[in-house]
Structures are given as C-alpha cells and as structure tokens.
Length: 366
Image (cartoon, rainbow, N blue to C red; front, side):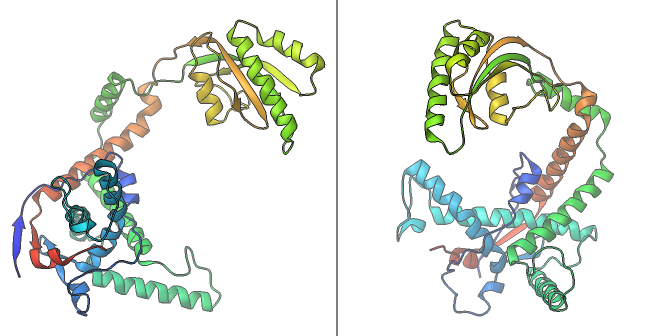
C-alpha cells in the first residue's frame, strides 16, 4: 500500500487549552465508511502512524463525525452550498469538503497521539492502542453492570459510551502530563510579570468603572398581561421623559400618585467592591446595561424580575487596573497552559507521521 512520510508541523491550535481538551469528546452519530466496509479488518486498518504508533480507522471514525458539522457550516457560509449526493467529492473554488473533513479528523488524531505517546513515555499510561482502550471500556462497563446488579454505589453513568470514556481517560492523562511538564518547567515570577505587563498594554485586567445610576421600575403581576402591558407603557413614557431631562424622583412621585402599577425608584452603585446586597437587582443584563452607560445617558426599557426598568447614569469614575497580586494566580495558570501548549506544539512539529494513502483515500462520509 502506498505511504508517504511527512514531517510537517500540525500546529496545536489552542487559544484556551481546556476548551480544546473539552472538545475532544466526540459524537456517536452513525455514518458509512466506503471502500472496505464489508471487510472485518477494515476498522483495524492503519490510516497513519505517529512515531510508529498506529492510528486506526476505528480511531478516525468518531473524529470524522465530530468535524462533519463544522465542515458543512464552513461551506454553507463561504460557498452557500447545501449537502447533496455529490457534495463531499465536489470542488468549490478548489476546496473539496471530503478532503477537508478527512484532514481535520486526522490532524486531531495526530495531536491526540503525540500526547498519548508523551504520556506513555512518562508512564502515565501503559498501552495507547485503540484496541486496548476498547478492551478497557468493556471491562469498565462490565464492572459497572455487576456493581449495579449487586446494588453497589457507582459514580458516573451506569454504562460509559465509547466517546465519553475516551474523553475521560484522555483528559485525566492530559492533566497529569501538564502537571509533570510544569514541574520540569515551573512558571517563574518573571514570566508572570511579563504576562501581566503585556496584558495591561492591551487594556486587559481593567477594573469595572464605578458607575452611579438612578433607576425607576414599574412592577407587574406575573401572568397578568394587562398589568404587564400597562407597566411597559409607563416605562416607555418614563424613558422618554428621562431622556428629555426629567428626574427619576419627580417621575416616581408623579406616577405614584394615581397609578395602579407599583413603582420603585432610587440610586444604585456598581463597582469592583460593590457588595452582593448593593447589587440587587443585578443580573448580568442589568449590570451590563448600567456600566455601559455614559454620564447623562438613559438606558432603554428592559425587563427584569417582574418589572420594567429604566436607568440613567449620573456618575462614572474609572477604577484603573487590577494589581498584579490580585490576578497572580490566574496569570500563573494562563502561563502554565501556554507553556504546555508550546510543549505539545513542539512534539507535533518533530513527530514523524506516515500516512497510508490507500486507507486514507477510502475514508468517505455520506
């Protein structure tokens, strides 16, 4: 069978390391592999090797399924095409969906394999073959089945799905590998300081501005469409009056005299030291609305906790940036993740990948 050796860099793309690890979990959607689908040995066929460690068809299958939706979305957005009978083998300005899908799946398998190889070298795992993983999965599910039958306590699902169990084992191993790498190359204070200075230059770690607002709320009864409509109408009218220079307290007094709708008003401060009680009511939307206003600016009408609110910013003071000691731990973790990403990237860069063109060519999605 035809093979080719490549020593190209499959970059470990990782803006947020653990987000990347989380997406290693894969779907179990059914699909067809054309070519040798009737051959009992097809799934154990080797698509590629990474430093002589095999990647089998069986390992690639879930990754093909996982990346299918993103490839479909890509071609829909860029080329405005929907999948039809010939979609996967058609060329759209030189881009072939099936080839892009296979490359995405194999690239992920290669990255996974270099991590597994590193874990094996550090004795974090003994056998990294997919066939051994499937045996371990079967044993674990048998153990759980027996435990449930004997009314013993188990943690997690009664039975692990293939993708879930693989993700669990792989994530656990990756965490341990990251810890070992960090022990060998610990994060220094100089690295933390450099990261902090760079972040500050990019306007990160900025404290929430101190914002003081006036607010007025028109309450309604849940399930009462009439009172809700009346409250909204009054809030919209109040919003216009506030925008034209009226004061919250004056509006509250005026509306409160003859209105059947309960009205609440007052001032509220938002800043980095505000206590929980002072933040009430302060959902994400409420807070974002308030801190996003300029001095003198009036918000639109928004609904929160069975009331329609309007707020007006009356004071705003910049609070500056968080001090290094306030964000030291989060920066240390970020640098740790960056260093691990570079470590994995280097492993992938120097790995020898041999692709079996015949097997690789027979992988198809329908």
